[in-house]
Image (cartoon, rainbow over all chains, first blue to last red; front, side, top):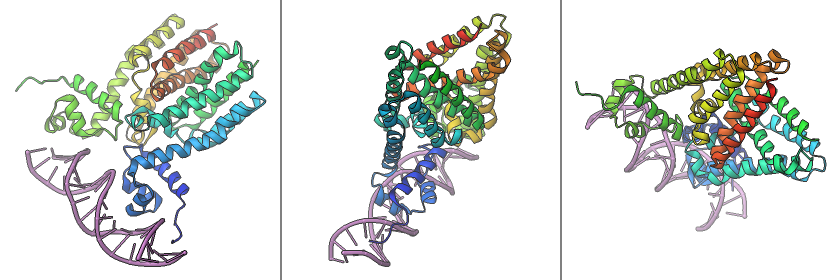
Amino acid sequence: MPAALLSREDAITRIAEVFREHGFAGSSLSAITEATGLGKGSLYNHFPGGKDQMGAEVLAHIDGWFETQVYAPLRQSDDPRVAITAMFDAVDAYFRSGRRICLVGAFALDATRDRFAAAVQGYFTHWIDALALALAAGGAADALAHAHVLAESAVAGIQGALTLSRALNDPAVFMRQMQEMRARLNAALA
Amino acid sequence: MPAALLSREDAITRIAEVFREHGFAGSSLSAITEATGLGKGSLYNHFPGGKDQMGAEVLAHIDGWFETQVYAPLRQSDDPRVAITAMFDAVDAYFRSGRRICLVGAFALDATRDRFAAAVQGYFTHWIDALALALAAGGAADALAHAHVLAESAVAGIQGALTLSRALNDPAVFMRQMQEMRARLNAALA
DNA sequence: GTCTATAGAGTGATAGAC
DNA sequence: GTCTATCACTCTATAGAC
């Protein structure tokens, strides 16, 4: 077997960047061949299901990253304050301080959501639930009742800050809002 | 000359709904002809600039609505608390309690932003500035300094709640988060 | 020979422009 | 409705590893 020019993972991350830039519907196969350097034959060899399979695998790859880097630490940590700080550090790195959008959030907004409904829903529920667990463990004021709503507002705030940063073409918006959000969550931890 | 079957404004709002559902890149002219009942010839008669012009006019229409229903009241009101309540009522009505996305936010996320950069940026800066003005007038704690950051976080929270609501297919997320946001802003008003 | 990865011409369908 | 360009995708062919 000849050496692959690109590992499967490399191909997936490059395809993800095409989706980020043009959206799912706006990403043509020729843009994908250009970004990956793979011809159509190679692409269909790796992803017989075509664009839909590429979308699904990109989402699975993102989910894998968040699962190990964000959700699991939130669920397992002894010290919620440390876990939440680590979450924001990971989020800042992943979204390049607001210069990179959330592909799952972008997929959620149009009909693309319906093709990947389970993955899109899973991404956000896992995130919110893991964060709520950490907040509740930290004993947020009337903890269990409010932790889920607070976690929801944090995840929504992150998504909105990404949207705003990109709309205004200003990463400072994201950085500023993440600063605020860190403070809000820390304040909730008694 | 036969009577138009659809006013220009009706056509624009129907085109907007197509964009909301499929995104800009994913909206085909045939989907637009179907939604408007206008043939391709009629569409190019009304919008010689094609899809780009449709996008621009849809954004202008949205901006007009927000200018009169949201921004102007925020700027002009004597009572910031009343103005902010009115803003959330308008937002809730416009976004149908989370069942409808923000098209400007959706456009912001992919390459569509670059086609309409000024409109996208204007929508959010006008919103944030108007809300910051109301918050500062209401004497938010160390008012002028923090009002803009707080306004930014409110607009980001709205955008994120819309994303989350649609991702989870649950309007309750949006309604819950708007409730929280109303309380947060009211608390900031001394 | 089989199998995997490559490339790309060629398919019908459909895109946006007019 | 007509146009051409481009779409997602198929198919054939090639290379080299076993």
